[in-house]
Image 1 (cartoon, one colour):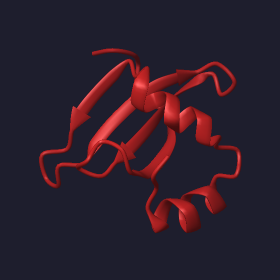
Image 2: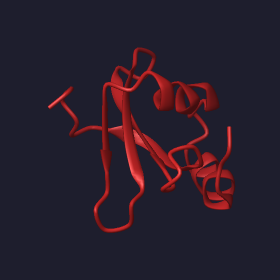
Image 3: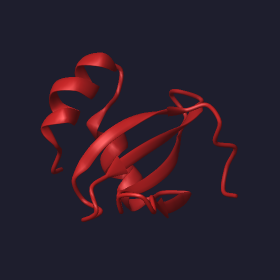
Image 4: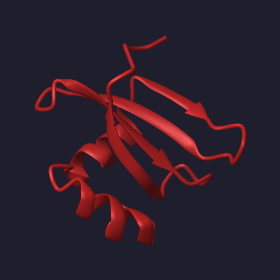
Length: 79
């Protein structure tokens, strides 16, 4: 999985419970996907049973390089 330096040094340090496999799976098995109009980054959501929440994974414009990931408490499923 390709990642940004921000993800490696900031996000994983701040959220040690995150699993890389969840992020990888989100890019393949997402329940919802949308492009951020302001910068072209792509958001993917996947439900993680272990967290009992949806995980939002944000990639760069290429749709492959993970930049951010966090549990999204406001996402309620496929809109």
